[in-house]
Amino acid sequence: MGKYNDWAEKKAAEIERMRAQGGQAVREAASDSPGVDIGYFDYDEWTPGTAYKKGDVFTHNGKCGFCRQAVNSLEIYPPFSIGTEALYGARPAADIDGVYPYVYNMRAEAGMRVRSAKDGEVYTCIQPADPLLYDPADVPAHFTK
Image (tube, rainbow, N blue to C red; front, side, top):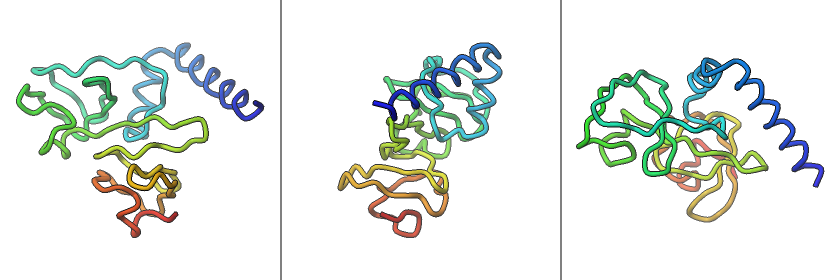
């Protein structure tokens, strides 16, 4: 129970600090590490016909994502569809142990722990991958078990 309480207190303090600083703190945290969800925030729904900046964070069909580059969104190229990997990336949220589930087209940073969708094992990123298009179990140059 102590591990959960420590995690919950840390998250609560982080959220309170960001709320006190306003939206700018959220944008800065997202742009510092756009491939890793900072968690517990509602992002605007991705909308066709919108001019997005690099690092902008959004939701689409219940999933969180970010813009890899500035883009004018088009209805025929929604996030998380084949062919948009250079435009949009996925932002999975970590579990209580700090392990991220593998999601196609996420960003992996050195030291990040990612749970394989293929074998359920946890892998540690040893070399950044952005975008990460393959399960950690399939890219030993980037992950160790």
